[in-house]
Length: 172
View 1: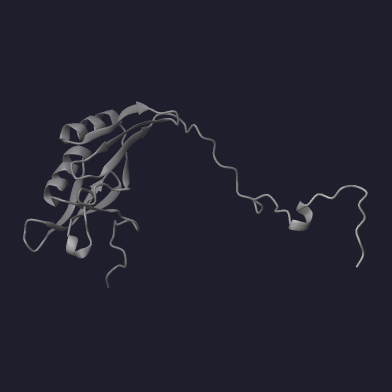
View 2 (view 1 turned 120 degrees about the vertical axis):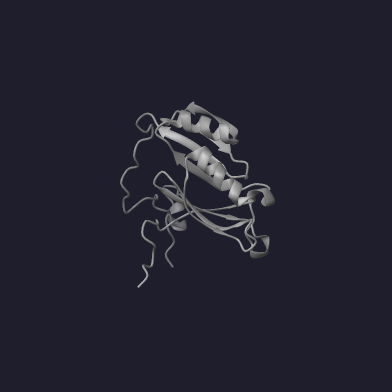
């Protein structure tokens, strides 16, 4: 009997749609140290129907764009709202490796006020990634535990109207 979730697969896996799947796989190997888990070629043997990559302890799916099936790359859409966060033990070396492989710097690597060393690149396929490493304890305090009452009590219309002193209420 097959397992409902394949062994070693997290329950959430992002899928990147790209134009030029084979070149993208090669780029992610060079730029981010991705390991190729599997690749299924398209029926034309030139495109990638499905690929699985491993970057650190995370899985990533990848496929060529297939506009007829609604799968369009950021190049076809002229952008993407999705940003992939990548954590590295040596973010300076990882950032340099990504740029050397052809990624374009969109935010230079720098020490940030929240405690991370952080920068952003865009790959040749239109996807953006944030590269970071934690270099200090988080600058933000942990949120306070949630309580049953998180919003201020609303005033009803009757209580919202101020009454002047000395004004008697009429009895009906």
